[in-house]
Length: 145
Image 1 (cartoon, one colour):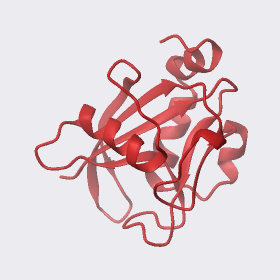
Image 2 (image 1 turned 60 degrees about the horizontal axis):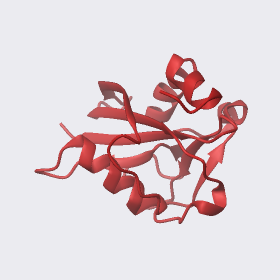
Image 3 (image 1 turned 90 degrees about the horizontal axis):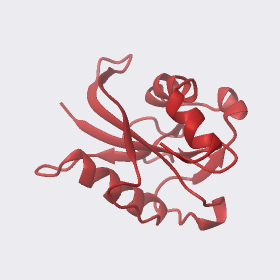
């Protein structure tokens, strides 16, 4: 089963960093999703999430910057299943600090605007739960975990 490490970074306004995937994405092409991706063979989830953030955004994170928020298997409507680890963290960054390494755009999105986005199935599943979580409230309010 594919292993996927993704992250939901929250800025001081409470906006969440999301990726607008391009037409070349192997899954959820042209849709909005979470930053992150596949855990490589021989790699652990923790290493993968930091590698993926750097590759996709230019943001360098280190152990301690992120918290594991959720871990579970997710099934897409086409039957594809993946093992997800969803991390979260607070950053004091803006869209201008992001170096686009993959996709059409990676920007901080106001949670109020997310229902209007064409969301990948995984984002549509995890994001509302994250936005309703105590962790999101803590990250958005003070940055403390």
